Image (cartoon, rainbow, N blue to C red; front, side, top):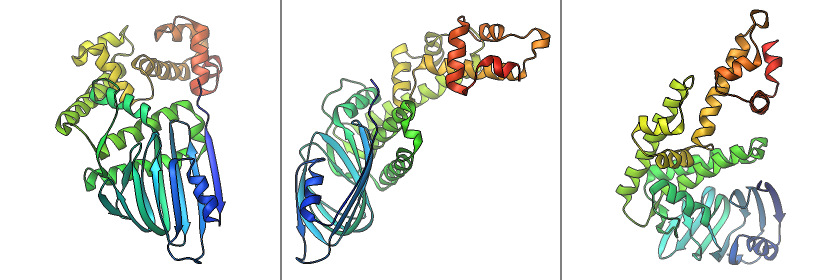
Length: 316
């Protein structure tokens, strides 16, 4: 099923209307001007799907309030302005990224404030964690609302900022782009904040999967002209087929088989560009050379990747 892509913008100068708008993301949301009678303005925009979204919120005027998060993971940071917050006994300021888990209550004073917030479906993140670290897709819990380190805080901010730019554009309409962005954002949260459990064991698991992914990709690229399979890649890397699948599920938006097909399709496209019909080169011969037994299916994959029929490329 294709996820519905949402693009939303909202503005109001009424604190009560802004509070009602926030209830779309929180179980509870209460806020009031820190100083009665001061000017107020609330602006919100977000882009995403029901699995992942990134929003930017701007408050003009000082505010104080509390919120309780629903069944999502939300993490964010201030771009500029003032923010003092407390979550589960931990306090932070505008200079700190903050993570809210399902049911977390946040008390804060803020404003003026310009902030970026990432929301992820908790069940989807649990499945990604199971792929990344092994084990079952159980409940994901974090030790602290603060990032695990300053370095990881910078990493998290950078991933979110890059993703926000892409989600606001046309590229986000592509299912593959959405899948890739979701994975990078989920991994940024899982790695950027302190999960409960043994971090050294998790780090080893992540590093190991990254090596598996890199070596499998290199194998596919080096031997694509041979009749290799995903099982051959697993044997070459020295892991099980399940580990290859896990590595691609975490670090790619495609399966190992899809990646191998894309490598072969790229090579076939290059052969079509170099081909000469006067020498007897044909689309079918090129397709067979790169393992595409069905010429019609090869043509469809080629059109999806390059926007033209393979025959057009060969006869250009």
